[in-house]
Length: 115
Image 1 (cartoon, rainbow, N blue to C red):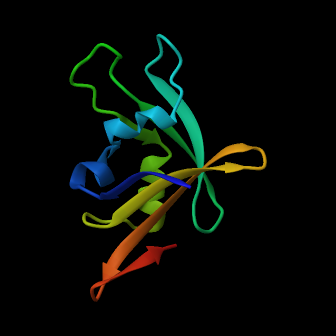
Image 2: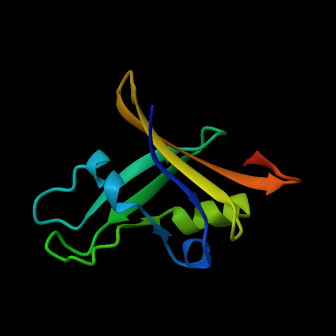
């Protein structure tokens, strides 16, 4: 299992798009000349989400990768708030690479899974 991101959510993350860490871009093959790739991630209750990872452009020094697609629906369905934590990881499965996503919320100093 390779963790691609672990992040406390900001207001922008829950209202617009999820900022994705540039150092983890290696995990996705964005075709030459393209600025986005779609991928499916499964949550902790086995629901599948279709996300879009996009960058501004290869030669843009200010490239800030972001995740959109089903992201805002994921936020609404899970009731996510500023300060909640999101995890995205990948692992080799029987049918190829599999991406997974989960959210956690801190309750009384303990991080718990958000279903």
